[in-house]
Picture 1 (spheres, rainbow, N blue to C red):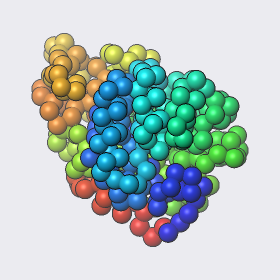
Picture 2: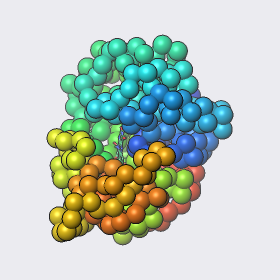
Picture 3: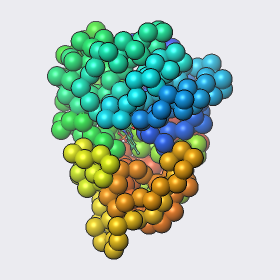
Length: 312
Ligand SMILES: Cc1cc2nc3c(=O)[nH]c(=O)nc-3n(C[C@H](O)[C@H](O)[C@H](O)COP(=O)(O)O)c2cc1C
């Protein structure tokens, strides 16, 4: 099996990271990926400290392999980062300027700090803020997209900007061929999101998973359409959900679960449909990367890990 700076630093067997993806990335999913040898990530988004603590306590009680946690900067709670740093192997941030105070908080108890970036400048800032590893996210990526550059030129630029840090490549990677390609291009690991949205352990509504199965790489679009609750943040979704939301007649498209509560979901709101969502699922934000053509069925996360890392 291939050893890289990523596997050595993080302590996992495979140069593969499952992307943190908010509520989709359940404890079950993170644990399944970590047990299969990749770096499993639990989504924290903007959850409060108690929720982050209990999710991570559960995750680390179920696997001795390293587990990470992902925070979204527009919603982050510093107390939650402190709890995360006491429990997770990797504490990761996305969508905001690299912040040395948060990085210090994350690292206070020997966790590694990671920042997902969309440019070489942002990678340098993450290094200066004290990060231990960097994720370079190409514009092919599903979900919110930080930069404007395709993965290969971005990866090159980030590797040159922060040569001493392990760099993980993200965006449009959905097959073993693509994983091998980014490793050959100098990445220390591949990060995969969309494939894991269709994992059995993910909190994904079956209609969302089915829409991914039916879509090909030309069926995504980079847009700012789903901006209620998080404005001015470009994201890649299935084109069909933008069209369905535009055609939807009404202000509320359905309901989604937010922790224990249920919430009426405004048209063009950011949350994507989990298993408990009701209403017009196809008019909700169905995030997907250009890797979506590689989603052919719903399957166990461990099987996805095996497929992605075959022949490494
Ligand atoms: C449904 C979905 C939700 C996402 N949510 C987050 C998130 O909460 N935090 C984050 O850092 N990245 C998030 N991302 C982006 C991923 O970290 C990653 O960059 C992307 O999935 C890589 O492209 P791929 O989907 O083609 O594999 C999300 C992606 C998707 C598909």
